[in-house]
Amino acid sequence: MKSLLSILILSIFSLVSNAQDYNSISGKIIDKETKEPLPFASIYIKNNATGTTSNKDGTFIFHVSSHIGTEPVTISMIGYISTQIPADQFTKNQIIYLQQGVSQLDQVILTSEKPLTAKKIVKKAYKSIDINYPKEPYILEGFIRDLQNEDGRYVELLECAVKFRYENYKDYNSPKVELQEVRRSYIAKKHSWNEDFERKNSIVDIIEDDFIRYDYGPIKVKNGWVYKIESVLPFADRLVYKITGTNPPFQKATLYIDTKNFAFVRIELNRSRNKKKYYKRRLTNGQQEAGYDIIFEYQEYKGKMYLKYLKEEDTWHIYEGLGSNQILFIKHPKKELFINKIITKNIGANNFSHNHNSNKSIENQAGLYNPEFWKYYNAPTLTNEESKIVEELKKANINSLQKE
Image (cartoon, rainbow, N blue to C red; front, side, top):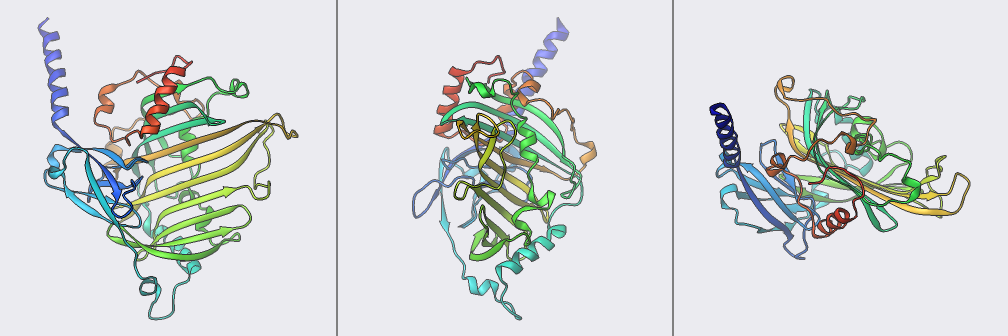
């Protein structure tokens, strides 16, 4: 009995200590001129490996160590002048205004020799990858949200916390993955075409597209890409080139490249149909991709660039078969990865467990819901729209999967 009492006391003490170790600051980030919310802005402690991201409504909650004290919290976004607020001066749900900023293009691209063209900037950024991205092992901790839509109706939602271990940025093998926790997993009634298919593994989808690691896409000047410098914009304590690229007839891209070290800061790619034609042929099961959008954003930590945010949105037309012109339904999946911690020291000593099975859906690897894990976990807050979707999927959930 005494032993049991001791365990209970230790457990309570552990929970209280955990709560005391964190302070939660919250706010909404807004464009100073337009008063519109700013989505996917970065919120972090400078020179610290942890951070979070504002949601589509511009809101955020950031759980920071109580030992941070007066350390400034930096809020930054491409195209805006960064601002800093001491952690202990945040008010609840503080409104934070960011001012747009534009630099003179000519002052940046002119050199003592001759102006840099868009093509030369992209080429230089590509050649600088070995310098700007990590060659030593590292771990990224992050949050995945996977939302599936059929004909305008939401049918699936998955949210999970993961760790990725990379040997270096150019390791073509898939990173080792630790599936930490699953927060939400709902599946509503789907189209009958989907009933015989196990849901594809969300983590596999997230890590299989990476232009920097796998050396392809608009970062390579070859393969018909044409580039144009649009502007120079502020980002954090630097300036970045905004360069648009086209690769007719299906591809468009926007590249944000650091003006000093020529690191890729953000990469956007869109593939869409042109005159009912598309770059991909129809699959044997009747699927044909009709649209593809992907965004990568990177953050600098100790002189190297690490992934910060990834979003992939696809549009799939599902036909009755390979030769049919009859569309059964349109599928629209959206997957996002938000990195909230970078680990670069003592990788071997890190408590990392490679427990992820890429051949099984995440739902079928989920354990019991653990509320204490999520209490101070830096996941992006749900938007009002996403909260409604969650409630609708809760009611429509037809699987005996783990709920929060």
